[in-house]
Amino acid sequence: MTNFPTNKPHISYSEVRTWKECSWRHKLQQIDKIDTFEVSPFLDYGTIVHEACEHFLKTRELDLEKMAASIRQAWEKRGYDSDEYINKQKLIAEAKGNKPWPHNYVDSWVEWATNAISDLPAFMDKAFPGWEYVAAEQELYEAIPNDDLKFKGFIDGIIKTPTPRGGWRGWIIDWKTAPKWGWHANKKRDVLVTSQLALYKNYWVRKYNVNPKDIHCGFVLLKRDAPPGQTCELVKVSVGPKAAAKADKLVANMISSVRRGLFFKNRDSCKYCEFLDTKHCP
Ligand code: SF4
Image 1 (tube, rainbow, N blue to C red):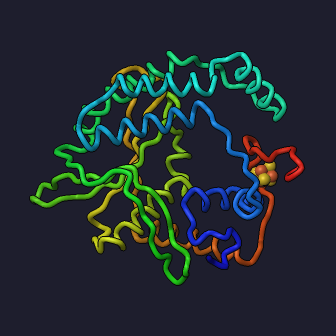
Image 2 (cartoon, rainbow, N blue to C red; image 1 turned 180 degrees about the vertical axis):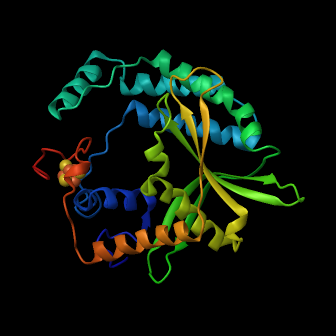
């Protein structure tokens, strides 16, 4: 056991991100253990597309039929296309003062996934010429400097590409499903977003004693509803010494603040928060 207020011996990037966005929300989720997890088409779609990317990375083969079947099974099991589910989502959005997302039926999700995964081989060859597989879904469970907690994470993909001088360059990549326009420029620059890859790189290079200069990072966006041939985009993330130190500092600040019991409500983060207007956060 640990003396950390969450009663867990580790932290993850998503926990750090939640804390940075609203430390009160982090307290509710991680310390008070108020479980608000709800399945959603976006989550299931993301999981299934990630599995398809992982399969491709390992085998260089596409299994579009299996992927489509997984999406249809999930939609059937969860009832995402039922009137009951559609109406419930509409009511939840309206109650929070948000515009409901337009409902997309399962055929659209299957089409988007098929287009994105079909684009992946050509995209990978163009973005990472000569790439070779190193690892997929690689677990990190590493000591945090100057602390007894561990940092836990899973790296979606690690590949290597040849350099002009006959060496190799490593790439840490993270698949992200995204809307058809991808990410706006401010999201691509958002330190809280890029810290995910900075932390993965920090812990991965320490684990394998690799020179950080030899490791590059990037998000691969897989866009829903984008035309075939335009579904994939590489968002490179530069993690130099400053960004690496900043990411470590973010983790240290989070740990220190949680240990001291400092929790604040950040009303700028409420829009899609599951605790909004509940007894936990009136
Ligand atoms: S509703 Fe707002 S203030 Fe309350 S926990 Fe959620 S993000 Fe934080």
